Amino acid sequence: MKKVGVAILGLGVVGGGTYQILTRHYEFYKKVHSVEIVVEKVLEKNRQRVLDLGIPESKIAANIDEICSDPDIDIVVEVMGGVEPAKTFTLAALGAGKSVVTSNKELYCKYSHELEKVAKSNGCGLFYEATCVGGVPVIRALLDNLQGNKISSLMGIINGTTNYILTNMSSKGATYEEVLKDAQKLGYAEADPRADVEGYDAAYKLSILSSLAFHTKIPYTAIYREGITEISEKDINYGKHLGYTLKLLAIGRNTENGVEVRVHPTFINSEHPLASVNDSYNGVYITGDSVEDVMLYGRGAGALPTGSAIVGDIIYCATHDNFRYSPFENTAEADPATKFVTNFESEYYLRFDAADMAGVLSGIAAVLSKYDISVAQVLQESGQTNKAVPLIVITHVTHENSVRKAIEEIDSMDVAKTVAVIRVVS
Ligand code: HSE
Image (cartoon, rainbow, N blue to C red; front, side, top):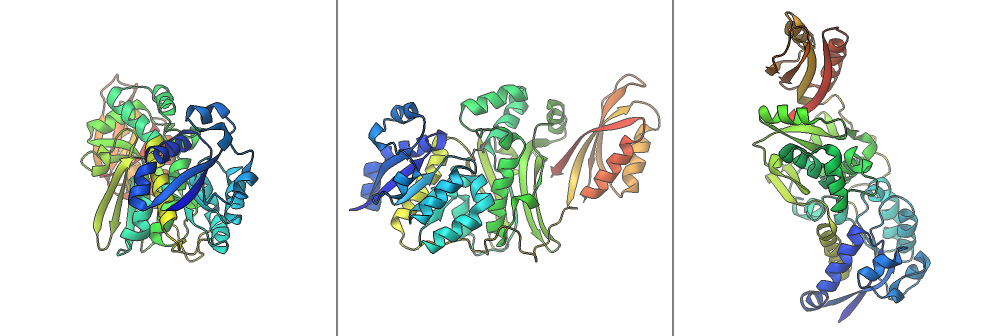
């Protein structure tokens, strides 16, 4: 029977989940895949963590060199997160001829061009299903199953932590701080949760997914990014009242005008399939010219769901002799021929604090009209005359730059102040 030796770098949430799955299914993999997958070494500073997982102390490697020089190790699983020392260790493993399976979206997003070059020249595999959308097999779907398509758009909830936070703020009225703590306890959040709540994690994932979908490198620096830190419960509730659900949405579009990539809080029509993706679940809605619409759905974070993606890659690697690499030219920057659209089109939810007196609404409407922004809905809470009251406007489709100019002008008037600008997908 073929024996494949594995080393795991990092035994945090994902490393622990991976080890549990490999141990639990050891006999099953021998039976169904005719391969014996053995965890030979682990690299983890926290000895107690290793022992708690039932891993013998003798398997703790002193350093990365011990792993790279071990002839019994074929696959190195990098689940440490962050750029360094993960990058140095990954390059060392690939350089030593070991295939690498990673869940590290920041590293893969920023340096896949460098890692892939070393993997190719050493004839080893570089697998990254676990970098995006936890247990949902979206990378393989883009690499293989959706090849019969030109993909025009990819829209998704691709961060479990923020989805967990927004769902619980919306359904239980919990505060942002309370729910963030829960998400950390449940092992969804990154070591530094700012990566989640400020949208970096989703931007890294969108860079990886949109590069695959649009067959050209989409660097994360090209992605417009806004997190959920400024979101207030008030907007979640006004949106709900108007038939929208708030999500941190990653959007990639490939249009005649160019590529549009953005991550920001978005009100989605509550009837849209993505609106019912709750808690740590993720969903990716892909539109292709042959398949039309496809939605992939599942747990986007957590030990076993992400471990499931890692183990899928380990088995793929263990049972294939030839490895494939990016189906596009994997460079650090975008191809100079790729045009990015920053003045994108969207509908908008605008909330103003407006003086409740004659002429204010018409003043706001006049500015919106000046920038060719057509109003679809207006909601105003009644209040005391001359006191500021919430005024909510939903626009028809307009341009990002028009909205920016209009709110700047409205804010310069004494009677209204913009307090929230949220893009809408209806
Ligand atoms: N922090 C990430 C998330 C983990 O919440 O989605 C999975 O990539």
